Length: 194
Image (tube, rainbow, N blue to C red; front, side, top):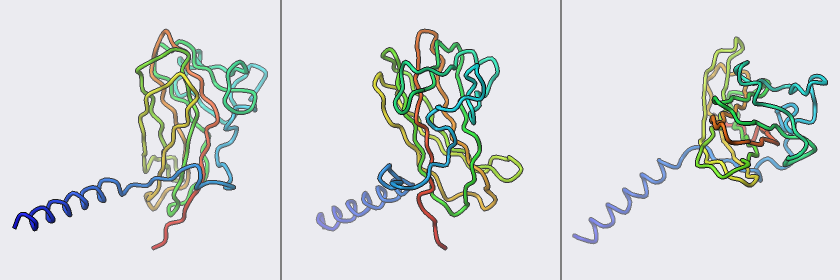
């Protein structure tokens, strides 16, 4: 009797574990030799001589004053984005790129802080229809470290009407902090079949 009860409980735990962890989970090894969908992902292109970021948007005009291009600290290439002493949350948004409703996508960014912090940032993947209406949202929250670290997000199983995707990084306010952001990429990894 005890043996059967143990077996039932054990199988129950296994089922719960399988269901709880059945979400998408891609990694960098899954995208080897796949094309990056994000334009200017390493911030090497400038929109103009004032170093306005090409193919990127800072969500709130009043937050733009915290964001600038730097060549002093970078993960890849010669430049990165530096977010200096933000007194409000800062959202940095990629240009829209085409996605397929039956696709699985893997996106990542590299981020670090100048000083030690307990703050977290949010990495998001939004899917939109052809009219720009948001249809799906995926998000991961991560603690920020002082060393360059890769943070990632997997997304898929989209609404049938999706057409475009965007990667968004939401950085927390911290008047005494500098964040560095670089190498933000997104890849179509998989095509789901019916």
